[in-house]
Image (cartoon, rainbow, N blue to C red; front, top):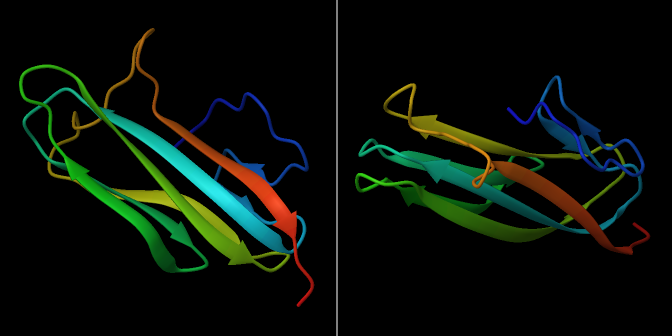
Length: 113
C-alpha cells in the first residue's frame, strides 16, 4: 500500500507487503493518514498483531478529506503492524503534492518479555 519509503531505521517496514515487523520487542506508536476525494466511504484500520488498535471511516464531500489515526501497541520481536482498509470504490483514496497517504511507526521504548 505504501510503496515509497522515506525513513526505515531498523528495516522494519516492507514496502512490498505493507507490513511493519518489529525488529525489537517494545511499545510502538503507529500513525496513518488516508485521504479521500469522493463520496465513497474509506474505512481504515491500524492492525497490530492481528488486532485492530485504531479505526476510522470517512468520505470526501466533493473535496479531499484526510483522516489521521494513531494507535499504540506492545509488540514482541517479529510481530507485525499494518494499515488495512476497505473501500467501496477504486478511487476512494487519493494523494497529490499536498496530501499524502502515510504510515509510520515509532519505537517508544523497549520491553523485556
